[in-house]
Image 1 (cartoon, rainbow, N blue to C red):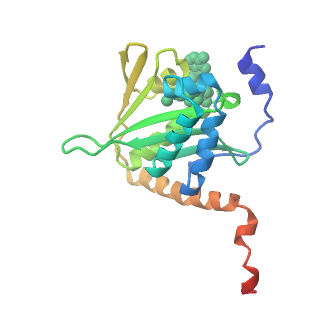
Image 2: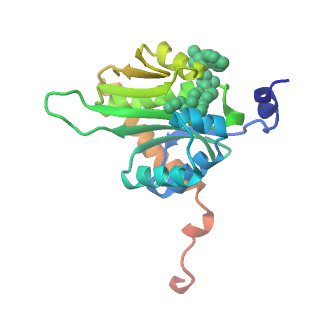
Length: 205
Ligand SMILES: CC(C)(COP(=O)(O)OP(=O)(O)OC[C@H]1O[C@@H](n2cnc3c(N)ncnc32)[C@H](O)[C@@H]1OP(=O)(O)O)[C@@H](O)C(=O)NCCC(=O)NCCS
């Protein structure tokens, strides 16, 4: 049995899963997710070695900049993310962003990365991003497959690949669906919060 098969067997079947935007209050979960990535996944995600302090700094920057983070939750726990980092707007140039993905090792190879990518593309489409850039190592077969399947233009640079994706323009329907998803993300996150924070303060009784 391969390590990947052993990892998959070591997790219980997921009872409930969802993909939704992270709320600003959930960026600590994003840092915890990055810190749970195994060394190879971290290496693949950041195209090099990254220390824990560097991961924490990256997570803090993402939170400061309020980057868009779509999360995959399994039984309420964040196990995978798709990130979208808008690039500075330049006159006459398409609205661009960098995108990146990570799924924790035991959850890899189950179609979660592909689902996150489709949802991120839908988000980008609704928010009028015209050019998405993605960087990954040439040895990253899954990431390459995900990009090629979605018609990314790939350019090789040494052992790295740069992918460019152009989401189709939004339609009223796709825009409305994303707006509904944003509302539902807030509702789902709120329903997952501990019940006690909704109880009235004793002094107000
Ligand atoms: C890359 C990553 C996000 C993919 O997520 P995942 O959930 O493991 O991937 P999926 O199971 O959705 O598989 C993605 C595609 O690769 C295919 N695939 C699976 N194993 C593969 C392999 N060994 N070689 C090539 N393709 C493979 C799948 O069939 C799927 O294609 P499909 O959508 O056409 O069916 C995840 O493996 C990961 O987090 N890796 C570490 C971090 C990283 O590499 N990030 C990318 C740089 S930003």
